[in-house]
Image 1: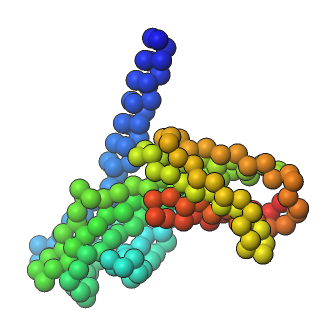
Image 2: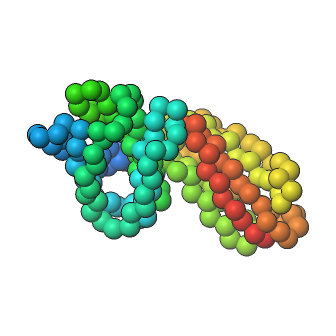
Length: 196
């Protein structure tokens, strides 16, 4: 019983640390005194190559740029954006951070309270075995789909009920060729292409 309690406490501490670490590195935004629609966007990068996107409320990409480095800092003039709600999305190798902001006639307001962090699934392929893992802090389900080169669905399964979603796929019974793995979770689809 003591061992079980220790494990539960250890898991709780680890999850709390992950949530704090994921949210502590949210970008810092400084609004210019002379122009309230000019913002300085800065953050430290610990997640490899990034894709930084600005999306409108219909998820249409209005701006996209690639960043490789450890410190990002750039000024943006948002004067030409129409009034409305937008998202800045920082898409890294292991997670996606999304920060909503609102543009009005007078200024720009970033809503850190409603920012989200999405942990990406990890796919490892060794020979004809595929291992899939995903950290799911809020127990979000994940659908795993495998398609052959003709885009025919050959496998589908929904993983759920755990914080650490895992699935191993043995593909030795499949013929050589190209396959696509689609991982669908939290309204996002992640695609991996594999060759056997």
